[in-house]
Length: 194
Image 1 (tube, rainbow, N blue to C red):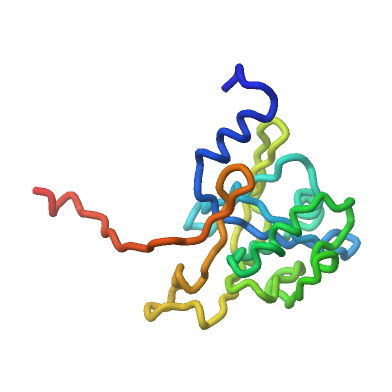
Image 2 (tube, one colour):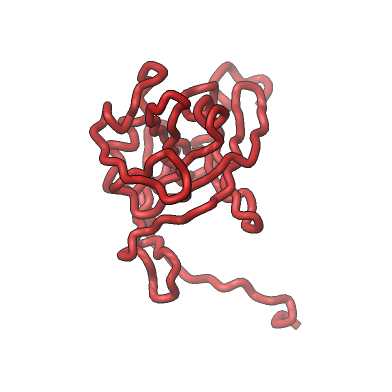
């Protein structure tokens, strides 16, 4: 990868590591301006304690606000709002509220100051759990302190049903993806192999 021209590693990695779920991250600045931005370098970092992580490439409002306030909300980016998710990725000037610029409704969070996206079926309210930098990229770790979920996306077992969540995902280039086929495959205990 070291011999590739500038930007090529990004294009190779984003076209290879697919699909990538989208963390639609809401933050509020110290001055009270709500920010909303999608991040497709996103995953679970730990279950105990419950921690998710996303990567900020460069220092943008999301990273500045998390550093200033220590709070954020990771909203699920549903496929039905893909155009709005993409619109919040626009390089607005610092201090712009993407909620207002794109016309997205907010709803208050239960445990943190940043609002949730009203149209998102699931939101993880979080407090910062630290960060780690790699070059121009910063991985932000966020401890989940509250989960807000629309009852209509829950399955019979009380957990979110991925089909009902209908998440959007990022692929390579300008491509996005939808969930597609969902199948059940149980892990086989070693004792059952003998």
